[in-house]
Every structure is written in C-alpha cells, then in structure tokens.
Image (cartoon, rainbow, N blue to C red):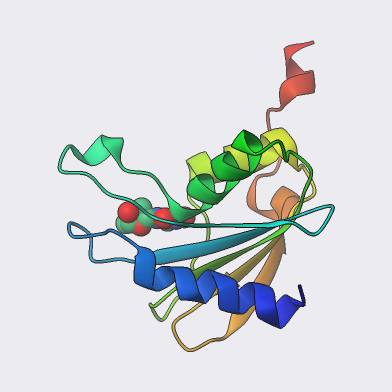
Length: 130
Ligand code: THU
C-alpha cells in the first residue's frame, strides 16, 4: 500500500468511530513489515475508561492476528490540530516498534510525521526490565 493509500485507509475509519461521548472521531491504519495493514477506530463506552483509542484498536488487532513487526501508522482526526497519539498508545507502540514512523493527519488532510523517539523520549521498554 502506498503512503497515500495508507492515509486514505486511516481517514476512512473516521466513519466507523463510535464516539457518542467525546464526538471526537479518530481513525488509524497500521502497516506491518510484510505490508499487511490493520485499521482501527476509537470505541467509547458509557463507562468511560472502558473505551479504546483507534491506534490501540489497530495495534491489538495486528497482534491478535500474529503481527508484531510494525512499520508505520497513520492517525487521522477531523480537527484543526494534527491527531497525535495519546501517552498510553505511545507506550504500546514502544513495546513493538521503538522506531515507529507516525503520520498524523488533521481534518484538512494535512500531515505531520514523527518518529516514536521524538514523541516518547527516554522510554521504558521490554529491555528495561533487565
Ligand atoms: N483518541 C484516540 O482514539 N486516539 C488518540 O490518540 C487520542 C484520543 C480518542 C479517545 C476518545 O475516544 C476520544 O479520542 C477523545 O479523547
């Protein structure tokens, strides 16, 4: 999948978001090393902490299907600001892909790309356990 196709896959997931509480839809498309793509959207719940972010939805789906080698992820939002991943999602990315490329989109279709070390410096990972 091309970069533009991956961006389109993330944006398409905005329509699947279940966000009746925040009204803040998020879509994600995760590309694995072999090219397989997993998508996700945020799924909220009346018991608020039970909700799940779009990125973790995509990452956990990938792991459940046997994919842990993540190459890049696109995160799409509809706001003015680029939709950057929350802290918990950054930590989950760190577990599987310490150098992950993270492409963040805003509602105008503009993008900004980060690496995970930029968003989560001095991170704690599996090797930190010794
Ligand atoms: N959200 C995501 O899905 N990903 C992020 O990185 C930021 C936040 C969701 C969680 C919640 O459903 C809504 O956006 C508002 O926080």
